[in-house]
Length: 254
Figure: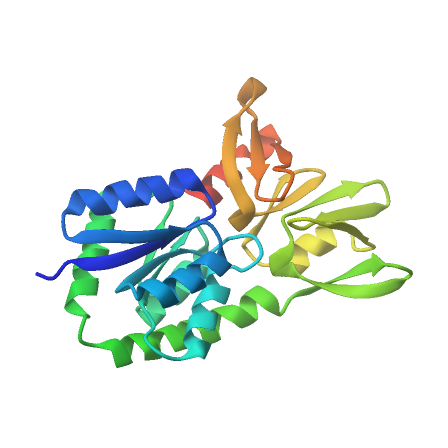
């Protein structure tokens, strides 16, 4: 069986290390490079021409889906793409329907071995892989980017893509919105915002709503509560109320 040349892209070093270790343990995959963001992933994919790109969906700036779209639009050889994601019901359904493989975090060695086996069988079906990837992106991208949040900015109303939101915090009569490196406010209530967004977003506290794909770490706290470390520039900490712990664990597959 041929050895698969793999590129690993994830903004979290521990996740990259875990995936590289598991891939190496299979004995049939050579990790030829790793990227910590979407821009690096595109550049390395073009330079190294790997057979497969293991790609984190949620990365700051250029997301995994943006990377896949960029590689597809640039033309030329496009590696087979295996998306890595935290629990997201809609995304999982879309991956399954479109038959483009995915891995749920935390990674499972048996599931990874099955994925590698499927990739090896599909080495000669590049046209089919490209077609399925196209279907996936057409299905997923509208759901990830079509929701707009009206925000106050310099005396006018701007529209924020929901996918950029890391978390929202209720602060009196305003709701503060935090992206990777900026913050702004909206006149929407937290409940209105929650109803507008999809299942990628979860209420974890009376005053906090988080983007599940922007959660970097779950930290046990006092009296059965937890704190979420978020994937914004400041690595913000968001409290999880005791009454929301069960839903948080279910949503993140803990």
